[in-house]
Length: 187
Image (tube, rainbow, N blue to C red):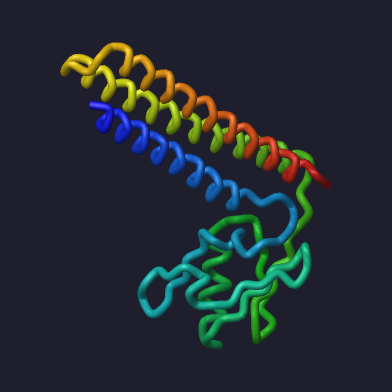
């Protein structure tokens, strides 16, 4: 019977790690003032009739903390890339110099920083909900095992382990959020 409990604990941990990974990915999309290629991660370009991620049709670089350069692999892609960046509505004004697209990343205003912190907190809360849902699913599975004859002590220990996992992952989320908040608020 303990094999089933171990399986429940492993799959719960896996699910919780997935929530953390998703949170980290979402945090990459929240810009913290300095230029980064991930800022254009959500931009899709019309490439011969299909929507293609920008990173698959161009090189994206950050020569300095305030500039992003996009160098298309094909010259004829300059206009579509510029248009895609405008359509993505991420607050950038791309400039086309004939060879590549240059984006000046404006410094964040205090108000914008506060909005980004709010957005980061919302993402962290979503991750916590994911963690709690994994805990609830695990506890439901443990209760089923108990009904099917697994000893009460084993089930109680398993529930305690699930709670320890939950606490550890919630703590990780809080740590990630604190780091991201500091990064956003740093002028």
